[in-house]
Length: 452
Image (cartoon, rainbow, N blue to C red):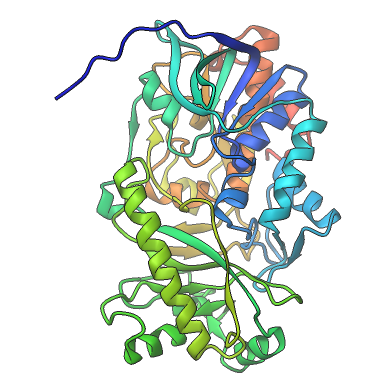
């Protein structure tokens, strides 16, 4: 059965040079980069805060892959971490040479970054449809408490995480079968943890990355990861299953603890992994939110019972939404490959670099030897839609390349590149496909990005 929605006139409430849809690490970086390149920018976000995975989901380990010999990305992503550190909104990571970003405090940091750059902020507006002129995108229709509204733009950046804009505008996209997608997570944090007791127990029985191979999980490493310390928890949940606190067949509750503060807050607990959920299906999202919270409460009870230091701990908060790692990706002008991310791919049209860090589809490779790959400009450009560029985990690539490029710092790299390209495309009146690479790379370097 179908109903016919009546035709209606939608008011144009705003026009801008560059419209960025989605404000996670990719979208936030894109908006800042475009504004710094000298055009008007509007940043659209469906929730009440900017920051995406950092703030709405609660993944505070922004650069947890970084080690002594890591050759890391540079640019706006590093600025996120440094700005958080400068205002006391971070804490040293337990497993890497980086700082975990306080997701709650970063909401205010992101506000400052947006306002300082002169970006027009639009929170609480959901993208629902592209405005098209043939194959050319000219803006977006949004929905909010104010009803339907239209925003016009010279260039649009899809930083939705799910390629919502590209998909609805007619660009070809693809995604893995539901059963093959990287699992979703419900992130949560605890308060009331005895830090000294917890750390003493962790040091007495440390886990490594080899311990990630357990139950339904298999892990492919290079071998060097196998003896490295990982903030991993498994034994409390094994005991909880044996004691009946967790169903015996539920062996996906285990994983990493995040940042531990002197106040007793233990944050971004990545313990609940949901397999077989599609983040573009609202029925799956509903089921995942509710099942994830149910499993998280089981995990909390297991920690209270069997993890020293957590006897008096209690739930502090859930993330505002599920952590989705894997949905649609665009079929781009160049789709990155497993070989690119494993073998230090090099490209003349590079717009950034990222360390040899692969995390997903049963692979864990940490960048401890200085190896890195280039990110080509072409991977940001969707097919069949003009004036649209993409950033974040939706950029073109195969499964294993996605396990690298989906990571938050890499999303910031492609975001900065997309924002810079959008600004130059407007200023130079050049299509994305014809944009001067020398101009693009020059502006990225001026903004502090490393491209080679």
